[in-house]
Image (cartoon, rainbow, N blue to C red; front, side, top):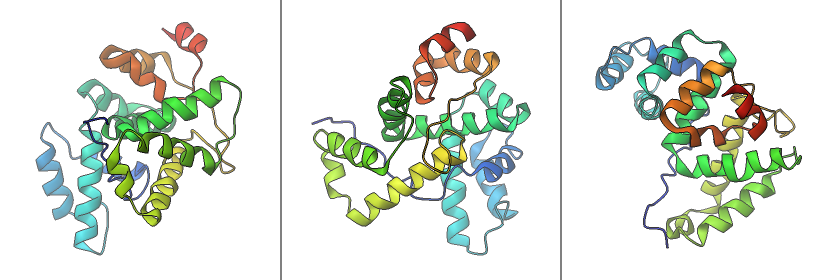
Amino acid sequence: MNQTKYAMSFTTGGLFYAESLSLLDLYSGDWDNVSRKALEQNTIQSRVVSTAKRVVREIVSRLKMLEEEELALLKESSSSEQKYLLWLGICRRYRFIAEFASEVVRERYLTLKYDLPAEEFEVFFNSKEEWHTELEKIADSTRNKLRTVLYRMLREADLIDGNNLIMPAMLTKELIHTIAKYNANDLAVFPISDSDLQKAI
């Protein structure tokens, strides 16, 4: 059994593209201050305080995974690159998602299997369950919600389309270099070929 448990608290929302950029505008080096301001100003425009707190906490936990240089790039890059960076933050926050992205999504892309049926999530979940007993405690309803949210994130990050077909990540040289500077292995969470990576690097 793997002693490092998966964090599985990603059932809140999806990529949170617009909301993440709004919170990033409040950032000046202190994430606690971002959370406070976001709730005071109701930055995410939620009518329910508990929902606002949950969403702000979730977004901040992802943005905190990005390095300062990556955050700077997130502010000034194109919408496509911004979505890729937000996806990167999600994968760093949730190892389960990162492993699904590299072991299932990218692997299928590399082997020219461009579809991503729901069954792939089930097979992946079952395989991880053998090593992570915390997954055994997850109810079927929650498991379905996790799959739904994960696929929504992939769709909103433009990594799969509306028919669950895998879309190649069009990473720029600058983005690749920035990510690789901190951990080149993180590039595996994107559907991109080894040859394309080598050309870019």
